[in-house]
Amino acid sequence: MFSGKKAQAALEYLTTYGWAIMAAIVALGALSYFGFMNPTSLLPDKCDFGKQLECVDYLIQGSEIKIMFRNNFGKEIEIADARGQNIDPTNVPVKIIPGDEEEVLFLISGSAPPKGEKKDVLINITFRRGDIAGSPSHSLVGSLFTTVQ
Image (cartoon, rainbow, N blue to C red):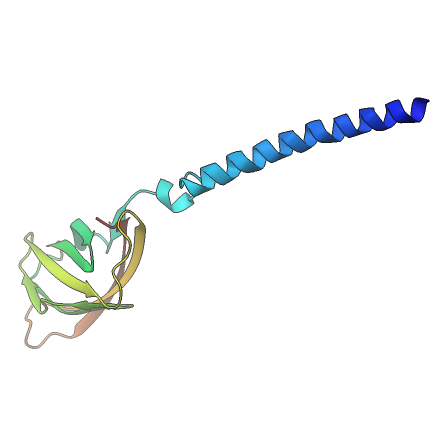
């Protein structure tokens, strides 16, 4: 007589917690589906090549990357090459006089990144300072992390 009531109480207890767990799983699934649980969407855009070669403006649009650099070296520089994984420059060499800004363009090889996603790009820049004809080459590695337009 009492075992039936105990079984019913146990079943109701498990069913109640089962529905609560199911609701939590559905809520987490919905948050994940709509991108609220993606930590990269919460990170700010940034472009960092150091203080001497300052990244003033940047944009990734389709399969094209545009970066506006300001020369803070105090001498004229020439960006001789700029490479990254699956990206190639289109307008180098670029000369930048001190305090001036110039744009460097890149093309992403392969498929273009999806619009609205954050893209992280490492770029290795080779440049010369001062007397461009006789000066040695220097290398600078920078990063770009921004939303694809």
